[in-house]
Image (cartoon, rainbow, N blue to C red; front, side, top):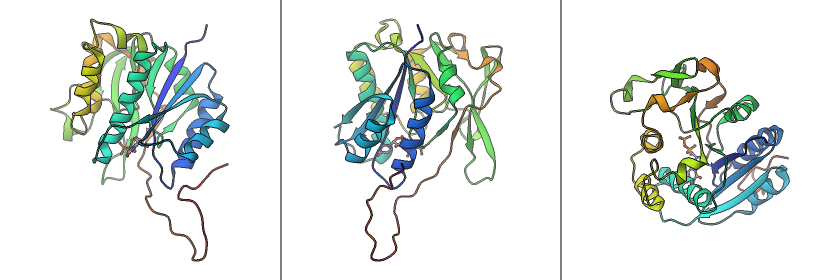
Length: 252
Ligand code: UDP
């Protein structure tokens, strides 16, 4: 049978949420089933998210993360951990992928995830901060073997693996492999909660693989860009006076 994809998306209510979730739902809808979309909100499930998921035509679960956090950056992390706990508790079988709501994904990416046996990684394109350039972050490959990393010099010496959150996926069986994932699972998840920004990915990956030899670079040679991590954010909306609209711009 076709491998199940478990796509984990932390999300929160803001102006562009409807646009982001609709865009992601459409590419997931075009991906061959089975796809399980695990969407995690913070504090409470919102009407807007429930509605988008309901009409997406994608199989989904909407979870709520209730862990207290004042730091907005940490919230996404706690939300991903809520999803991991759910996957572990219910032993959901498939390839787990962290897909933030605001990134841009090709259909080819989701199809390629099914090639992964244990742990797969690939280069992600992003815009360099303060430079008007697109840069890559992720593996340099020889065939499917990872032989090096594209990175930006700022963090070169510090991080073990130069992978974006949206640049890797893994087999969920790793989560219940006692040799890999530190036991008990809730402890290793808690440990991830306190990782400093920019180190989330590498800290996570260091727990699921030993080194590059246990990684598969996809697609072969890692020469294609399958997703973009851009920063398109708008926190406030300006309405013409006298108009009343919801906080979240809906997309139908
Ligand atoms: N996120 C969230 N709650 C928050 C902050 C972020 O659910 O309070 C989600 C957000 O919707 C996205 C992911 O976490 O799916 C990454 O957030 P962000 O885009 O702010 O991170 P960046 O792209 O800057 O790394």
